[in-house]
Amino acid sequence: MSEFQLSLLAIGLVVVVGVYLYGFWQQWRFRRSLGDAFRQSSSDPAIQAVPAAAQPAAAGDPLEEPLSSGSISPPAGDVCGLLNDATDYVVTMLLKTPITPAVLETLWQRRFDFGKTVLACGLNNHSGLWERLIPESEQTYRAFRIGLQLVDRTGSVSEMRLTGFRDLLGDIAGQLQVEVKLPPVEEAIKRAQELDRFCADVDQMIGINLLAGGDRKLFGTEVSNAAGRLGMDLQSDGAFHLLEENGETLFSLGASDGSPFQHHTLNQSRVDSLTLLLDIPRVDDPVRRFEQMVALAQELAKTLRASMVDDQRVALSEGAIAQIRAQVAATEALMLAGHITPGSAQALRLFS
Image (cartoon, rainbow, N blue to C red; front, top):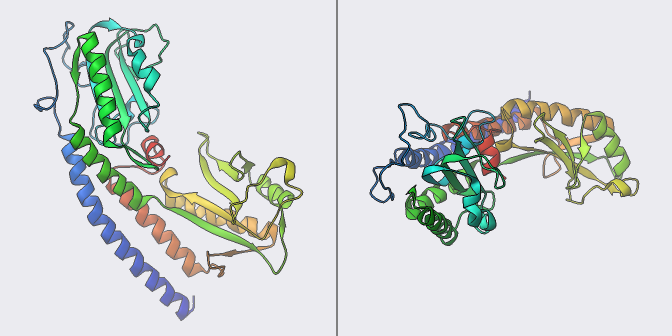
């Protein structure tokens, strides 16, 4: 590696360290707010509560402790484990007698009115396990936990919509005459704003551009064949995607100018450059995935007779790739410091 490349790498590392330190300070503030959310208890006078329901909870009964809130990232496949005071406004209802989800009819009718995802879970009266509620189910439950997601990529929930959500569930609980816990809206809004700032700090995509040489254009059919040999398929967004086993996108490949590829016009499409993208928060082990992305870009460049370049169309050197790798590692570290694992079910919710 030349002295010039070494100096570029050193400058890049200084920049990354500076960004990391600033982000670490942001995460300290964020983790402090998470700690406040996790420590919230049912003894809070702002939470409405009445004497326990008719059926008592035994020691260790999930009715006594509906969900653990020790970590934002739940076990894989644990859908109801996603409900967490740090990421959702969660309302808990303890029912006097087992009932079906049909009693939440008003919620089902209005679940799209609040601007964010609503997740409703119930404590199955027979299995004693928490499971996602199905509106038409005849299964009976002895507790409900219903959450409104506080943040996604469009921003944080508005106070007006969150208040409407709380009032709706409060009305439902009043009609059912059951015990209900309604957390304070003001505190939830504060958590939402903190979480939104955190997500904005780590919400990064990494792109590697593939530039055709001279005046040569890349035909859509040529791109499709090259991508197909590497396991990438054309999706409805007009880009080629390499999917993980769970169906989530690992990498995407599209025209750098944003023009979509379409099956019926591939033989007419021509582009001068492509961009291979890695969405850092939405993949597991981002540094390892970045290494795979570089290898994929190199293979595509070889097949398409293209050059790997940055956004200024300057050839990507080993030093530049190392700098990007350091940026990916810093972002991954910040997410883990904020108790959100990249590529986890919770990360997929927040960065959607």
